[in-house]
Image (tube, rainbow, N blue to C red; front, side, top):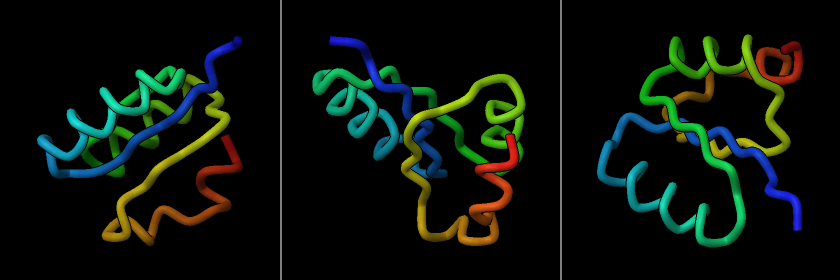
Length: 68
């Protein structure tokens, strides 16, 4: 089974750690960002198949995510 790439964006470090571990156990290759700037930097370098973005980052719009 090929791993699905996933970008996880949240400023809660404990949540990110727990969620990343759970997602990795389910076969995802997880990259984490704790801010919009970090997320955008990762999006410039990688194409992700999935994204889990905190509701507080709603200004990170779909065009921003899909344009990279």
